[in-house]
Length: 244
Image: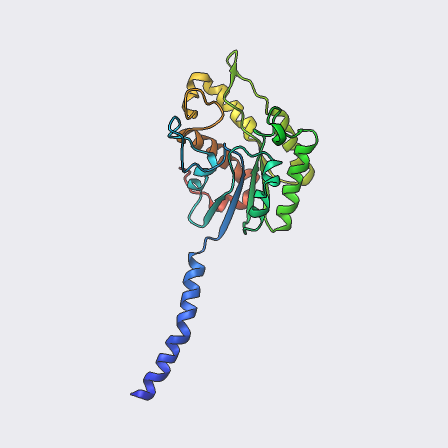
């Protein structure tokens, strides 16, 4: 009996690490998507009292993907394409392994933002190209997302100051052969369709026309996700069917 038991014990000892590794491999998500951007994208774990439902679209982005996907939302409130790099946020993000990188900057690049602002004709494009080149070098596939419009109406129609940044991003996308999800155009069309009163539920508070409520953030995320099959077909198999 001792002779037969000894090989069995040895076999179990050698198999345990194999089973453990297999279990860990099976538990690891097959795909990692990183998001970088500003407050319209970021997560909110501590919300201000006057905006208890404040939500970035990146915070709910994962709801539209299956369990094989992990979302790494590295977007932060108040950041522009320049300050995200200057503060070392981009360096930290690059050190994480991801398969795709979604990039959305623009709101804090606008005039009046001090040292965060960029010129859509020059520096804004330069920073976007830096993200693209360094993401590719790190093995990530970049995806550009034009900044959505603020929900500001004039004579019943959206008035946007972000169009130059959206157009600059589209230009960079063409030059660098990077897919661009034109969230700016999509959001302008949606808000014009809904009107001021009809789109009020997008706002987290009465006076905030930049950020989103939970319901509004999901609508914005849905606009992004709706473009994925055509613009980023490699992600299509990971989308939930039907979409939430």
